[in-house]
Length: 211
View (cartoon, rainbow, N blue to C red):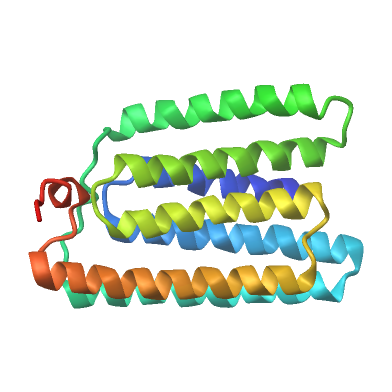
């Protein structure tokens, strides 16, 4: 079952690079976070650890329900169009994602030789998720995608910590959740203000502004 959840994370990471619409990107992030919560729940069941159960519930509350809802409301308020503004088309983006997978697999085979296959696969998916999060931040024009890209990278880091180190200390994870949530709220406020001032949130056009 754990492998199925990890496969779900990988599938929705790929779907993020081929989508053309902001709402589809947010939906893919939500579903990837849901599979991450299921992976965490499986780790909690395996370790019989109450703290990891609580972390998986917090994942659902914050990343599956709270943040996607907030981003959808933000889109409605600033009334942006659906297009992501692609600097790279979906086909080339998918090729890049496959290249990330190949590099991550090679790294995992070299570093974790003779280790548990579950840890090896978790490392591959964590690295691919981080690469794809960074890719979205660089190759998508809408400023709201910077938030989704950052959150996707955080999903990869979280999976890496859960798989390799059996989870960070409970209070560290709570602090990270709080930081991520506050970061999204503040960035959303900035987006709202930028859109009111310049009537768009296209990062390509924002870089052309002069003081």
